[in-house]
Amino acid sequence: MRAHDQPPTFTASVDLVALTVVVTDEHGRAVINLTERDFVVREDDYPQTLAEFSNVPLPLSIAVALDTSASMRGERFRQASQAVWRLLDRLAPRDELTIYGFNNRPYSIVEWTSSRNMVVMSMSAVEPMRVGGFTALFDAVRTGLGGLRNARQRQRALLVLSDGNDELPNDMRFRDDTHPFPGINLSAQTRLRQLIDYVTRSEELVYTIGITEKSSHEERLDGAALKALSEPTGGFAAIVNNDSDIPPAVEKVIDDLRTQYLVAFVPTHAPDGKFHKLTVTVRGCSCHARARSGFVHAR
Image (cartoon, rainbow, N blue to C red; front, top):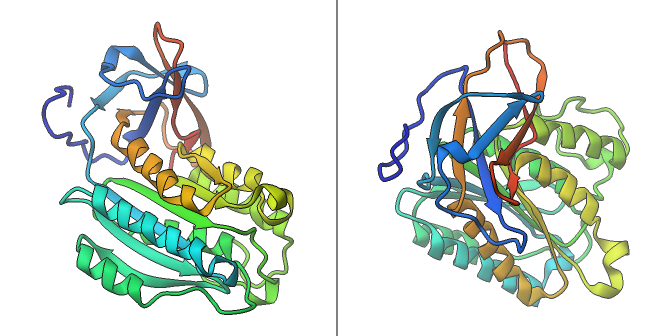
């Protein structure tokens, strides 16, 4: 579809590769009102012919993974909850939301819903662990992405809010069929590499918000890991130093989702089951175009 003033309806096709693109200027501000002719999409460095284009926002399915470990207690969790309320305020009627909590393991707080009352009621019963416990961050990312498979909308994103690194002992890991090697004792770095590969091959956007303090940034939060989990998908990582900065960071995620372009092309080669690199640029503009880094052309 090429008309900009009609709701976008992307053609259902196993061969159609659709991706969301955010374009910003040198000051980081969103660039809007671009046209299909402005975009150049390359697969493995070869320019592709766009089959579909839209700059009309699609309905959203957002999965939230909320850290409920003991370190989140108090003002930090209050601000994180406030961020969820702001997220609810920005949702359109056709948008939907699901929320997971995670400490020693991920768990469901509220299933997919468009009801604000349902989210408020479910969140009112949630509080972080009182003492002890761990942070199953990597399992929360996998669980959130798995939950997005059941989403109704085509535009999907995972938002992770946490103040810690993945520190779950291997014998406590949440094991299910989403893990490539369930039951095998793996180091955190090995599991991180596997998870980066997993999110890179997914079609969903991942946004991460890391909460820390300037004096303890290096010890408590691995910002590089959060970036590595989000940037290949076309999302971003935001590191905040004050609890009060959590709600504005979530609002930036919503702004990002509302200013995306949707572009799609049909690969010219047969499905090969391999990962293919994608790059997006904008003609005649010193802009930065952010999109997922590639796709797997399934057999």
